[in-house]
Image 1 (tube, rainbow, N blue to C red):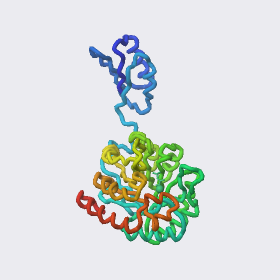
Image 2: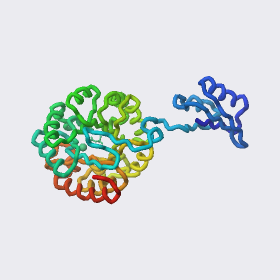
Image 3: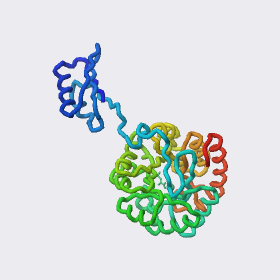
Image 4: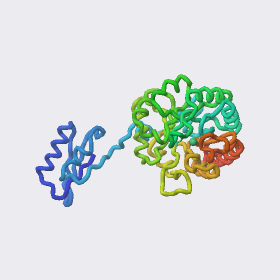
Length: 338
Ligand code: PEP
Ligand code: MN
């Protein structure tokens, strides 16, 4: 940590800073320039609060030199991490496409959806039994029964299930129902108590980016999960809020190379909740794969016009199959397996 002092700082106040650092059990290094005096803290700065120094009127600014996240940082693990989801690798060389409906509706809908997902060549399936809806009067998901319906449909095609956990009280139920990947939605990215609890199990977690979260905040949320013991984390960019109204969210493609540089963990893209319209999904999916994403989370419904939730953005099974062919081509051009 580097503390930059104001130009007119007195020697006495420099000593105040040095004494404070010493009282924290660390060493300091004072560097007096012509314009500025700078104090460097030598030691583990992770437990030092910047505000402990910013509070002094003679301190101009305090800069951290260490990253606030450790386990998820590429500094702690240089190689790409591959997460094993029921034998299917996420991250590394292979690109995985997770397909399925926004929400679990009926056994028939799930059977058709699972057949479509498998026929298109996707190796994992998504579907929400608990839905975070903006309006409390909108369909909230079919609940626990949906987890059962999902398993029956997905197991028939050996598809691991990806489903959203919103309430920490449902975690045991998710484990009992052998959910393969727990999805933490955009609205819960900073629900720290929920993150701590999913950190205590080993089930892989898809951590969606908060709709207004910075990349640093997103990484810190992942660190909450990792710090509690679960290192099986997959980042998912799903579009951020912007001034634009022509689409649902702005897909932050730039986040892909940034996240890949900052962390060793895989990153996938959700083009469906970004664009919010089915016709945008192919273009956003192509961009994501070309930019280095490790996979996609795509909404597909056997009959989109009848979907109970997010009907506008769901592909039909044929559209998903066609998209898979295009994506395979892009994957091979950039040297990835598909
Ligand atoms: C979803 O994937 O169904 C979902 C609700 O996504 P998000 O949290 O990104 O809005
Ligand atoms: Mn949805």
